[in-house]
Length: 123
Image 1 (cartoon, rainbow, N blue to C red):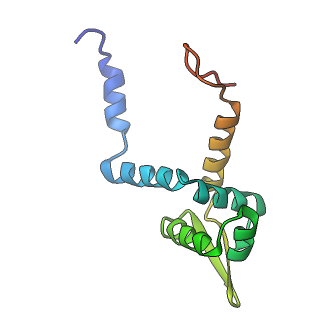
Image 2 (cartoon, rainbow, N blue to C red):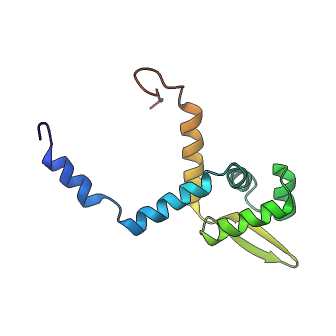
Image 3 (tube, helix red, strand yellow):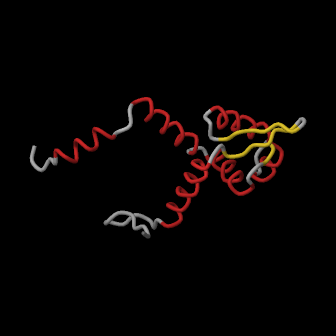
């Protein structure tokens, strides 16, 4: 094979995520890949903490749809809940989720449409 750089290949192989870790990573991206769940996450990013009825109102989404989405997000560890009386208030689970949402949005906002040379980003 011409042009193979063994040291770079070894670096990639040694540091590549394992199957289980990769499945978890892709699972998070699948969660973010749904527009309804993404809207809910960005609402939580802005507000910090919201109950189901506030999330539904803020995102123009039915409460039943919000509840179903929150069950998935909570089960995956992306959001956490706090019970106060009859209400549960949801928030992003940690700073990593906040950072992922911020970086993803920043990437989308600062990336221009692809050209023959590929996407242009600010650095």
